[in-house]
Amino acid sequence: MKPSNFRFPEARQCAILLLLLAAHQENSTKSITRFRLSELTLKRLWQRNRITDELLKEVQEWLARADWTIFYAAGLYAMVRIDAVENWDRLSSKRLANELKQVGNGTFDYEKHAHLIASDQDDNDD
Picture 1 (tube, rainbow, N blue to C red):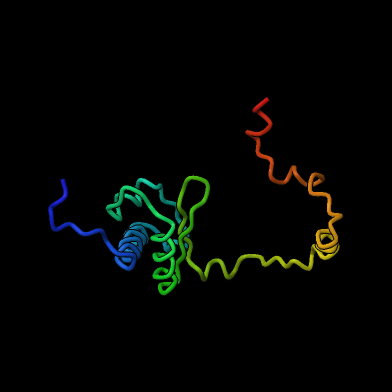
Picture 2 (cartoon, one colour):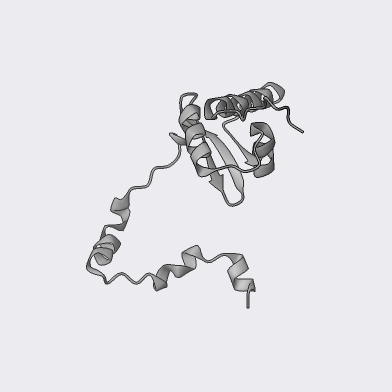
């Protein structure tokens, strides 16, 4: 049971706790640029029963000051150093100029490319 004067950590404090966790990991291994967290870990770390979108957005804002970002991805949360992302390959919409013209005039065939969003599990549902 939590004491009666218990207060949830605010977004800034949640960001500090995440950065502290990352610092502990860096001290025990090499410097890290990314890691994943379960929702349960975040709930424990932030003393929450649920993680709201509003809280996550506020924490993202504070983490950006430390050159980190956090996002939700397929049942997990991921933290990535922003400077690591800056070195990733960049894609431009210019590569799809012809396709985007078709989208604009209503002639693009989405079903022809539906396989791009199909997962292996979709194939096993039959």
